[in-house]
Length: 403
Image (tube, rainbow, N blue to C red):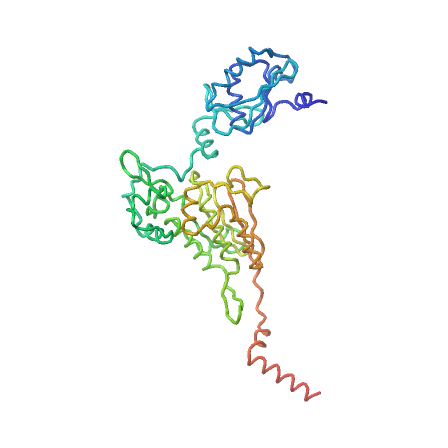
């Protein structure tokens, strides 16, 4: 059985389309494949998978090429001839989204779907054509609710000279831009330097911390909503974890060192990752930091960025919010792009606790499993004390005398 026989037997699919003739829908089918993962259009085969044949002359090919040339942006395809069948090989587009005179189309299973307004917006966002942190907010002038304390703190952490005026620094950081003759926050600028407390505009950008009794969410023992600037939210989330996780200690070179039951570096990395890479277009969910008896979950909306798979997870770096990531990098909250997952694993290994578990679908979740607290051996503790050792020695002496 040759390749064509296999295709005919399997029928139309996400990457295969049959057309009896090059009709008016051809351009939309090409767009749909280019906006998805590419595919092939077989002209001269009907919907039943029967070969009917088509005109394969140079003039016919030229007409098809003219139709495809009207797609925007320009798309280059390959046209092959198999006997009396014409095959248009459409690559996955490098400059999505593509449109034709009939609109925007996307391949979904064996069908090509026309995208409506909301679908188009969602598609632009998923393809990274529109990035949340880059958008200039012409409804948020920098003079409105500017958080001077957060700005001064950031400038100090980033070691930025105050020789330049504030407006120049904000523009250089991509935190502000010109619109209608005025200077306005970008979304990333507002997240860092605008007072966001009780602000419905950015309420979704905060962090919710919760402590539960047991291994589910039935009983809440403590909860806190963090709606400040991004840097404060990260720091305050760590304060919440330190407040509720067990504190232990170890002796290093005759010095006692306190440490959390879970590695602080790994927890902080997970929170920074959640804040940095979450989908800020999703306004119905927030970053969650949840403590259970058996684990800590840190969850962010949006899953992983497009292009990251389970196979390359942890080795490939794709940033959903590049301006936001750059801001955190400047102050040392991110050390090196793409190393967060490995840093979390290494920190867990050094602390001799279970490696974090990662789950991603519509959300991205990092789970740190807690080690059950061992019961205190009071007799062993007593025997390690000076008075305890004396008591043990005395009992042993009495035993020897009786013997």
